[in-house]
Length: 125
Image (cartoon, rainbow, N blue to C red):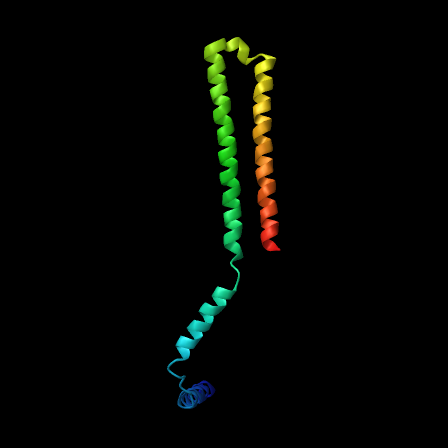
């Protein structure tokens, strides 16, 4: 019990010595530290934003291209159904033209992805 009490007294004395020997920082130190932090933030490249932008661009491009494809296919189906009837929807000519439209839009998406990839590699260099 006495050892614990003497240890507490020693700790208290040590704290008093440390507080009395403390050196006060200059007034403008905080300003200089904040300025240094802001400078470092400005110099560090912001890589996380680019990755999110890239993902958003890919989804936006994909949605735009394939959304347009489905709109064109829907218009084709509606036009053929009202003009030529249900029998022509199941014919090889219509299925072939639907596959052609899907292939063209898929090729357009592939070209846009290739273009985005080439632009990204050009930015990195």
